[in-house]
Image (cartoon, rainbow, N blue to C red):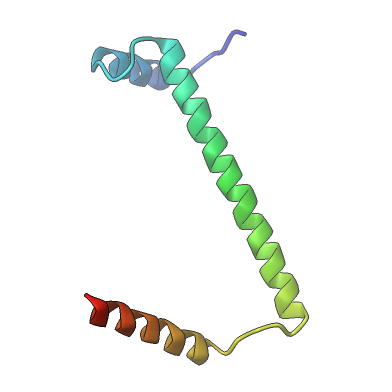
Length: 83
């Protein structure tokens, strides 16, 4: 596979290799693809959670914000007392 990169990306890759963080262009590119895959997966999960939340709202499955904050404050209080 041939890939054309912008000059600034090529410079960045070379700088990463020169710094000793990576030994080759392949290592840099593999790490970049791995990070992109993680980001895409996180975005997919977030979209799923948003869709689920939107559906719950449409079905009236909501909790009053003040109740949520009161529960969070209670959890924080318990945690700080345990310390």
